Length: 323
Ligand code: PBG
Image (cartoon, rainbow, N blue to C red; front, side, top):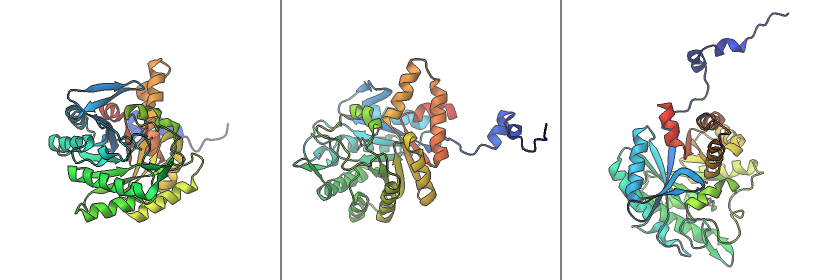
């Protein structure tokens, strides 16, 4: 038999050796936990398609955020379920809106925690679309104004970062201008720059009661088949002043994450979305897969593809294992 010069197995013999040559590392500090704030007090309503994820009243949001902080998760992203929804998403930019209240409460109770606010209208519109609709059309520029107001109200409530996810053209620029105009130039923008029209958001729409009442989101979210277009989206948001870029969903789009990583030097976020979480949960509940291992392997693949930080409903579970 010929001499084997290279024997990759030499470096796999013991865990400490494997750790020494490990390329991508998952750390608690990379994880962001999404939380859904709803009206009321003492409310903790589990989302049926997302076991372990809840609609939480503001007091419960605070408890959940402190628990997360205690296991080493340094950031939350907040979504809101308003008392009432209307055509113009009033609840999104109300000073005393549910998300604004949740931001203030977390800020006060866990001052060291990074508070990110999802900036979109779909949770607040009666029709469930991410902007202003007229005659069945989603109007881009009219929506920008409302997104900018929403971002300002979130930043005034104390959000460190606003994260526009409506996929309107020019949203990052409009928000940057509005924040600066309000003296909020220290508030950062995490742009959902590359967001696909994805069936993986299904369970989220139950969590946020935000399924569109008619049509779908394909006129604003991206076509799953497109990669070069993703680079153009990222380029625009970079030019408009984004502080972070995001790719969403994560696992079906690891190639896109890698491409954005290679072309742009901004911090890169990946959103491991509701359906990606639900699939692991469902298979694990049937005993078909090992939940912990599949979770860690999945999150590691997202890091390996190039994400600096990962938004995931598994943030606390993963953090506990990584401790
Ligand atoms: C708001 C928004 C959505 C998600 C994050 N922000 C829903 C959507 O676009 O339909 C999805 C997150 C998830 O599925 O976990 N536009």
